[in-house]
Length: 386
Ligand SMILES: *Cc1c(COP(=O)(O)O)cnc(C)c1O
Image 1 (cartoon, rainbow, N blue to C red):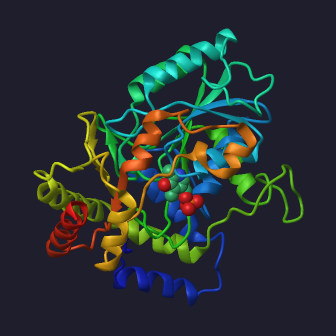
Image 2: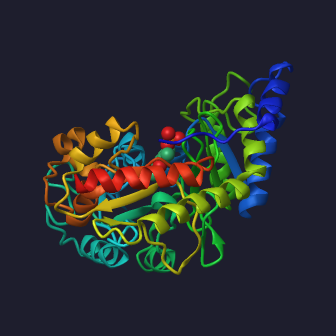
Image 3: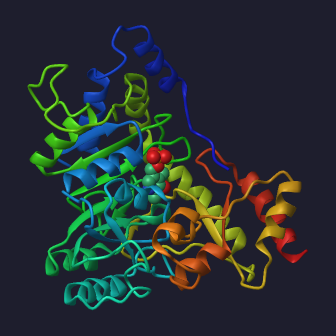
C-alpha cells in the first residue's frame, strides 16, 4: 500500500547513532525538535514515540479529564478518539463535510450551542450511554484528514465563541498549509506522526508542536516518566509515561525532514497522475482539494466508488491482480468497543458512514512511478466494470 522513501543519508545517520553510546535523550532528539520548530514556525516541539502518545500528552496538557466533553470527528483513525478515552473524557462526535471528510463547522457550531444550553439529546449529539451528567463542551479535537487541513477559520472562531481548547491531530498533514499557514499551527497544540506510511517516517514516532511554554514543559515531563525540569532520575513530579523517542528514530527523522518538501512534491505528482487517469471514469470519484488548502500534503489517495459498486468484490478482484487497496477510514463510532461503551448505531453519522462505505485507498507513496499508477488505474477500472 505504501513504501518509505529512504536514502543513503538516512542509513548513515542511523548508523552514526549506533556507533555512539547515546541511544536515547541525546542531541538528535533535541536537534529534531529544533528542526521541527524551524520548519513549522512553532516555539516548542516535543518528540515522542508515536503520534498516539503525542495526542495523549496534548489531552493531558489541555487539562481534559474524566467526564469532560470533547467535540471531535468519527471519520478518523481511532487514535484521535482513543486518547480522549484514556482520560475517561466523553468524545462527542460531529459529522463531516462530504467534500473533504473533515469535521463540519456548521454541525460543530450546533453541537457546541446545544451542549451549552444543556439541551443535547442522546442520539443527536450525546452518545446513548456513557455520558451521564455531560455538560458544555470543554475542547475540540480536529483532524486534518488525508493531508488536508480542517476548516480552521470557522473552527478557531468557534473556539473563541465557546471558550473551547483546540487540539489539532495533524498526524496525516505534515507539510500541508491552510491559507498559507502550516498545518499544526491552529490549536493550542498539534501532533505529527511518523509511522512508515506517513509523509516522512522515523519507524515509529511523533512530535508535538505548541507555542505554550507551560504546556510544553508539562508534556516534556510527562513524556519522561513525569520528571519535571530539575527532577532527578528517581524523582517524579507528575504521573507520567515512557513516551520517549530513540536517538536512532530522531536522527532518521532529521534527515527525512530535510527531504520532506521534496517527498511531499513527489506525492503530489503521484496524486496528479491518479486524478488525471481517473478523471473521465464516472464510477470512481477522485479526492478534492479545497481552495483554503493552499498546500496539500497527500498522505493517502482515497477514491470513492459509486454507491452501486460492490466494494468487497473490487478489493478481491484487485487483490487477485496483485494490487492491494483498502477501505479508509472505518467510522470510529461503529467499532465494537465504541458501540458497547456508548451505544452508537448505524445511521448516527450518515456522511461518515457513506464515505466509510464507499472509500478505497489506492497504493500510494512518493516512490511510485507513472507506469505503476497507470497499471493501478487500468486494473481498478476493469475491477469496477467487471
Ligand atoms: C497516523 C495517525 C495517528 C497516529 O498514529 P501512530 O501510529 O500512533 O503514530 C493519529 N491520528 C491519525 C488521524 C493518524 O492518521
